[in-house]
Length: 57
Image 1 (cartoon, rainbow, N blue to C red):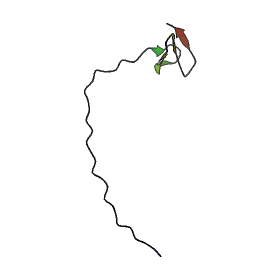
Image 2 (cartoon, rainbow, N blue to C red):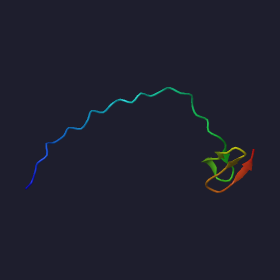
Image 3 (cartoon, helix red, strand yellow):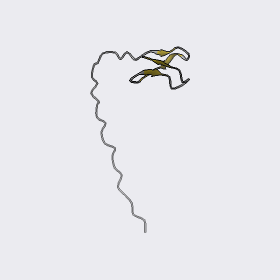
Image 4 (cartoon, one colour):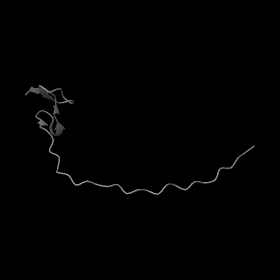
């Protein structure tokens, strides 16, 4: 026995509210990897997840 389901209409899309904020200025770039790769901020050091470079604060 085959039961046919009624077609459901997709829910209307809601508009998202966009907050105006200050531009985000991230931390330092990795000196070995160059621009585009940021150093992660830890309590006592900064480290690169790509090449393993770290520096103490």
